[in-house]
Length: 238
Ligand SMILES: Cc1cc2nc3c(=O)[nH]c(=O)nc-3n(C[C@H](O)[C@H](O)[C@H](O)COP(=O)(O)O)c2cc1C
Image 1 (cartoon, protein in one colour):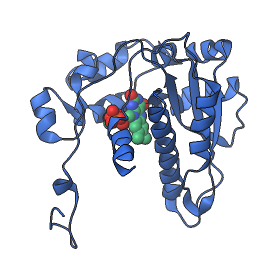
Image 2 (cartoon, protein in one colour; image 1 turned 120 degrees about the vertical axis):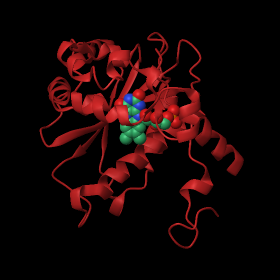
Image 3 (cartoon, helix red, strand yellow; image 1 turned 60 degrees about the vertical axis):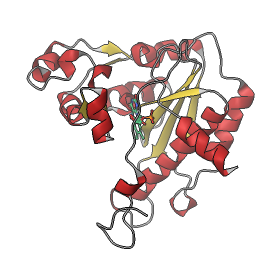
Protein backbone atom coordinates (compact mmCIF):
# COMPACT_ATOMS: atom_id res chain seq x y z
CA UNK A 1 0.00 0.00 0.00
CA UNK A 2 2.72 2.50 0.99
CA UNK A 3 4.70 1.42 -2.10
CA UNK A 4 1.66 2.07 -4.29
CA UNK A 5 1.09 5.52 -2.78
CA UNK A 6 4.75 6.44 -3.24
CA UNK A 7 4.68 5.23 -6.86
CA UNK A 8 1.63 7.37 -7.62
CA UNK A 9 3.31 10.38 -5.99
CA UNK A 10 6.52 9.85 -7.94
CA UNK A 11 4.79 9.23 -11.26
CA UNK A 12 2.47 12.25 -11.03
CA UNK A 13 3.83 14.91 -13.33
CA UNK A 14 2.97 18.12 -15.14
CA UNK A 15 1.71 16.98 -18.48
CA UNK A 16 2.13 20.04 -20.67
CA UNK A 17 1.52 18.42 -24.04
CA UNK A 18 -1.69 18.49 -26.13
CA UNK A 19 -4.61 16.34 -24.99
CA UNK A 20 -7.10 14.58 -27.22
CA UNK A 21 -10.10 16.92 -27.44
CA UNK A 22 -12.33 14.01 -28.45
CA UNK A 23 -11.55 11.83 -25.45
CA UNK A 24 -13.65 12.97 -22.53
CA UNK A 25 -12.72 12.32 -18.91
CA UNK A 26 -15.34 9.72 -17.91
CA UNK A 27 -17.97 11.02 -15.47
CA UNK A 28 -17.18 8.18 -13.04
CA UNK A 29 -13.50 9.21 -12.94
CA UNK A 30 -14.37 12.86 -12.60
CA UNK A 31 -16.55 11.99 -9.63
CA UNK A 32 -13.62 10.16 -8.00
CA UNK A 33 -11.38 13.20 -8.50
CA UNK A 34 -14.05 15.41 -6.95
CA UNK A 35 -14.48 12.96 -4.07
CA UNK A 36 -10.72 13.23 -3.45
CA UNK A 37 -11.17 17.02 -3.55
CA UNK A 38 -13.97 16.83 -0.99
CA UNK A 39 -11.71 15.08 1.52
CA UNK A 40 -8.91 17.63 1.27
CA UNK A 41 -7.46 18.75 4.61
CA UNK A 42 -8.02 22.51 5.00
CA UNK A 43 -7.20 24.96 7.78
CA UNK A 44 -9.99 24.83 10.38
CA UNK A 45 -11.80 22.49 7.99
CA UNK A 46 -13.00 25.65 6.25
CA UNK A 47 -13.14 23.82 2.90
CA UNK A 48 -12.29 27.17 1.40
CA UNK A 49 -12.87 26.26 -2.23
CA UNK A 50 -15.42 25.64 -4.93
CA UNK A 51 -14.62 23.92 -8.20
CA UNK A 52 -16.10 24.79 -11.56
CA UNK A 53 -15.98 21.87 -13.96
CA UNK A 54 -15.93 23.10 -17.54
CA UNK A 55 -16.42 20.35 -20.13
CA UNK A 56 -18.87 21.99 -22.50
CA UNK A 57 -17.24 22.51 -25.89
CA UNK A 58 -18.79 25.92 -26.45
CA UNK A 59 -17.73 27.11 -22.98
CA UNK A 60 -14.20 25.75 -23.54
CA UNK A 61 -13.96 27.50 -26.90
CA UNK A 62 -15.17 30.75 -25.37
CA UNK A 63 -12.56 30.55 -22.60
CA UNK A 64 -10.00 29.60 -25.23
CA UNK A 65 -10.64 32.83 -27.09
CA UNK A 66 -9.59 34.97 -24.10
CA UNK A 67 -6.16 36.45 -24.72
CA UNK A 68 -3.34 36.70 -22.22
CA UNK A 69 -0.04 38.54 -22.45
CA UNK A 70 3.23 37.39 -20.99
CA UNK A 71 4.60 39.73 -18.31
CA UNK A 72 8.15 40.92 -17.77
CA UNK A 73 7.77 40.09 -14.07
CA UNK A 74 7.06 36.46 -14.95
CA UNK A 75 9.89 36.16 -17.45
CA UNK A 76 12.50 37.72 -15.15
CA UNK A 77 11.54 35.57 -12.17
CA UNK A 78 11.14 32.52 -14.40
CA UNK A 79 14.70 32.98 -15.65
CA UNK A 80 16.08 32.59 -12.13
CA UNK A 81 14.64 29.06 -11.96
CA UNK A 82 16.06 27.84 -15.27
CA UNK A 83 18.87 25.49 -16.17
CA UNK A 84 20.30 25.35 -19.65
CA UNK A 85 21.45 21.75 -19.79
CA UNK A 86 20.43 18.47 -18.21
CA UNK A 87 23.76 18.49 -16.37
CA UNK A 88 23.10 21.91 -14.85
CA UNK A 89 19.58 20.84 -13.82
CA UNK A 90 20.88 17.59 -12.34
CA UNK A 91 23.41 19.55 -10.34
CA UNK A 92 20.96 22.19 -9.11
CA UNK A 93 18.16 19.68 -8.45
CA UNK A 94 15.57 22.48 -8.50
CA UNK A 95 13.86 24.35 -11.32
CA UNK A 96 13.17 23.47 -14.90
CA UNK A 97 14.87 23.45 -18.29
CA UNK A 98 15.11 26.69 -20.27
CA UNK A 99 14.42 24.73 -23.44
CA UNK A 100 10.76 24.60 -22.39
CA UNK A 101 10.44 28.27 -23.39
CA UNK A 102 11.05 30.32 -26.57
CA UNK A 103 14.72 31.47 -26.76
CA UNK A 104 13.86 35.18 -26.41
CA UNK A 105 12.11 34.44 -23.10
CA UNK A 106 15.19 32.91 -21.53
CA UNK A 107 17.78 35.55 -22.38
CA UNK A 108 17.75 38.40 -19.82
CA UNK A 109 19.11 40.82 -22.42
CA UNK A 110 16.14 40.15 -24.71
CA UNK A 111 13.30 39.88 -22.22
CA UNK A 112 12.12 43.52 -22.26
CA UNK A 113 12.01 43.56 -26.05
CA UNK A 114 10.32 40.16 -26.18
CA UNK A 115 7.58 41.38 -23.83
CA UNK A 116 7.04 44.51 -25.95
CA UNK A 117 6.80 42.46 -29.13
CA UNK A 118 4.80 39.54 -27.75
CA UNK A 119 1.34 39.28 -29.22
CA UNK A 120 -1.45 38.41 -26.78
CA UNK A 121 -1.99 34.65 -26.94
CA UNK A 122 -5.40 33.01 -26.82
CA UNK A 123 -5.89 30.63 -23.89
CA UNK A 124 -6.62 27.89 -26.38
CA UNK A 125 -2.82 27.62 -26.63
CA UNK A 126 -2.71 26.79 -22.93
CA UNK A 127 -5.79 24.55 -22.95
CA UNK A 128 -4.26 22.53 -25.81
CA UNK A 129 -7.21 20.31 -26.56
CA UNK A 130 -8.08 19.55 -22.96
CA UNK A 131 -11.72 18.40 -22.80
CA UNK A 132 -12.06 19.23 -19.09
CA UNK A 133 -10.97 22.15 -16.97
CA UNK A 134 -11.37 22.28 -13.22
CA UNK A 135 -11.30 25.89 -12.12
CA UNK A 136 -10.60 26.21 -8.41
CA UNK A 137 -12.06 29.33 -6.82
CA UNK A 138 -12.03 30.67 -3.27
CA UNK A 139 -13.83 33.36 -1.31
CA UNK A 140 -11.43 36.30 -1.02
CA UNK A 141 -13.47 37.84 1.84
CA UNK A 142 -12.54 35.03 4.22
CA UNK A 143 -9.31 33.82 5.73
CA UNK A 144 -8.24 31.05 8.10
CA UNK A 145 -8.33 32.39 11.67
CA UNK A 146 -5.46 34.83 12.35
CA UNK A 147 -3.68 33.68 9.19
CA UNK A 148 -1.83 36.70 7.80
CA UNK A 149 -2.25 36.88 4.05
CA UNK A 150 -4.37 33.73 4.50
CA UNK A 151 -1.24 31.63 4.12
CA UNK A 152 -3.07 28.74 5.76
CA UNK A 153 -5.94 29.11 3.31
CA UNK A 154 -3.53 28.97 0.38
CA UNK A 155 -1.76 25.94 1.81
CA UNK A 156 -5.20 24.31 1.94
CA UNK A 157 -5.72 25.05 -1.75
CA UNK A 158 -2.38 23.35 -2.40
CA UNK A 159 -3.58 20.27 -0.53
CA UNK A 160 -6.63 20.29 -2.78
CA UNK A 161 -4.42 20.43 -5.85
CA UNK A 162 -2.39 17.42 -4.79
CA UNK A 163 -5.44 15.37 -3.74
CA UNK A 164 -7.00 15.84 -7.17
CA UNK A 165 -3.72 15.36 -9.00
CA UNK A 166 -2.93 12.06 -7.29
CA UNK A 167 -6.42 10.74 -7.91
CA UNK A 168 -6.20 11.76 -11.58
CA UNK A 169 -2.78 10.08 -11.80
CA UNK A 170 -4.11 6.86 -10.31
CA UNK A 171 -6.89 6.87 -12.92
CA UNK A 172 -4.45 7.39 -15.80
CA UNK A 173 -5.67 10.94 -16.38
CA UNK A 174 -3.07 13.60 -17.13
CA UNK A 175 -3.10 17.01 -15.54
CA UNK A 176 -1.40 20.37 -15.77
CA UNK A 177 -1.82 23.40 -13.56
CA UNK A 178 -2.56 26.62 -15.41
CA UNK A 179 -1.72 29.62 -13.24
CA UNK A 180 -2.30 32.04 -16.12
CA UNK A 181 -6.04 31.79 -15.52
CA UNK A 182 -5.62 33.72 -12.27
CA UNK A 183 -3.75 36.66 -13.81
CA UNK A 184 -6.06 39.67 -13.22
CA UNK A 185 -7.18 40.52 -16.80
CA UNK A 186 -7.73 36.84 -17.69
CA UNK A 187 -9.44 36.11 -14.38
CA UNK A 188 -11.85 39.02 -14.94
CA UNK A 189 -12.87 37.64 -18.35
CA UNK A 190 -13.33 34.08 -17.10
CA UNK A 191 -15.37 35.31 -14.14
CA UNK A 192 -17.64 37.18 -16.52
CA UNK A 193 -18.07 34.18 -18.81
CA UNK A 194 -18.79 31.72 -16.01
CA UNK A 195 -20.87 34.07 -13.82
CA UNK A 196 -18.39 33.78 -10.94
CA UNK A 197 -19.29 36.37 -8.27
CA UNK A 198 -16.94 39.28 -7.68
CA UNK A 199 -15.79 38.12 -4.25
CA UNK A 200 -14.59 34.75 -5.53
CA UNK A 201 -11.07 34.55 -6.94
CA UNK A 202 -9.52 31.97 -9.22
CA UNK A 203 -6.74 30.09 -7.40
CA UNK A 204 -5.65 27.92 -10.31
CA UNK A 205 -7.03 25.79 -13.09
CA UNK A 206 -6.44 22.09 -13.65
CA UNK A 207 -6.30 21.05 -17.26
CA UNK A 208 -7.19 17.36 -17.56
CA UNK A 209 -7.28 14.76 -20.27
CA UNK A 210 -5.39 12.16 -22.23
CA UNK A 211 -2.16 13.18 -23.99
CA UNK A 212 -1.83 12.61 -27.69
CA UNK A 213 1.85 11.61 -27.22
CA UNK A 214 3.97 10.27 -24.35
CA UNK A 215 4.46 12.91 -21.68
CA UNK A 216 7.73 11.95 -20.00
CA UNK A 217 10.18 14.79 -19.49
CA UNK A 218 13.32 15.40 -17.49
CA UNK A 219 12.41 15.99 -13.82
CA UNK A 220 14.64 16.54 -10.82
CA UNK A 221 14.27 16.69 -7.07
CA UNK A 222 16.60 17.52 -4.19
CA UNK A 223 17.83 14.56 -2.12
CA UNK A 224 16.31 13.88 1.29
CA UNK A 225 19.79 14.43 2.77
CA UNK A 226 19.76 17.94 1.33
CA UNK A 227 16.33 19.10 2.44
CA UNK A 228 16.07 17.45 5.85
CA UNK A 229 17.69 18.85 9.00
CA UNK A 230 17.85 16.38 11.86
CA UNK A 231 16.95 17.80 15.27
CA UNK A 232 18.50 21.17 14.47
CA UNK A 233 18.95 23.40 11.45
CA UNK A 234 22.13 22.61 9.59
CA UNK A 235 22.37 19.02 10.76
CA UNK A 236 21.59 17.68 7.32
CA UNK A 237 20.11 14.24 6.67
CA UNK A 238 18.22 11.68 8.65
C1 LIG B 1 1.03 26.41 -7.24
C2 LIG B 1 1.56 25.81 -8.52
C3 LIG B 1 1.41 26.53 -9.71
C4 LIG B 1 1.87 25.98 -10.91
N1 LIG B 1 1.66 26.66 -12.10
C5 LIG B 1 1.98 26.05 -13.26
C6 LIG B 1 1.66 26.65 -14.51
O1 LIG B 1 1.07 27.72 -14.58
N2 LIG B 1 2.02 25.99 -15.65
C7 LIG B 1 2.66 24.78 -15.60
O2 LIG B 1 2.94 24.23 -16.65
N3 LIG B 1 2.99 24.20 -14.43
C8 LIG B 1 2.66 24.80 -13.28
N4 LIG B 1 2.95 24.19 -12.09
C9 LIG B 1 3.67 22.90 -12.10
C10 LIG B 1 5.11 23.02 -11.65
O3 LIG B 1 5.86 23.73 -12.57
C11 LIG B 1 5.62 21.58 -11.49
O4 LIG B 1 4.87 20.93 -10.49
C12 LIG B 1 7.10 21.50 -11.14
O5 LIG B 1 7.88 22.03 -12.17
C13 LIG B 1 7.53 20.06 -10.90
O6 LIG B 1 7.26 19.26 -12.03
P1 LIG B 1 6.27 18.02 -11.98
O7 LIG B 1 4.88 18.54 -11.68
O8 LIG B 1 6.32 17.41 -13.34
O9 LIG B 1 6.75 17.11 -10.91
C14 LIG B 1 2.50 24.72 -10.90
C15 LIG B 1 2.63 24.01 -9.69
C16 LIG B 1 2.15 24.55 -8.52
C17 LIG B 1 2.26 23.73 -7.26
